[in-house]
Image (cartoon, rainbow, N blue to C red):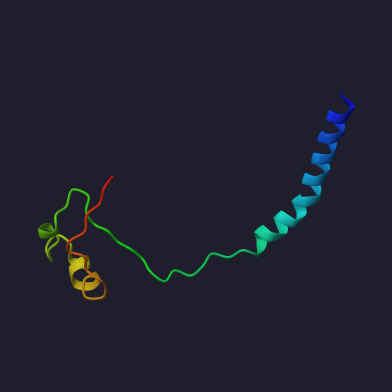
Length: 76
């Protein structure tokens, strides 16, 4: 019984010693810059439905400035 209490006390003291280091490390991390953004339009939409009338932003700006995938398959 004494060993068990001693081991629990030792483990608790180790966690308290390690706690300030983890808090300090968490404050120095930053979010990395985004190099690529993926916009996948496909829920209940076929490629023939993405036209200037139905999706003007995608056709006039996204399509000329991106890699336009025409044969994309998803599994869910």
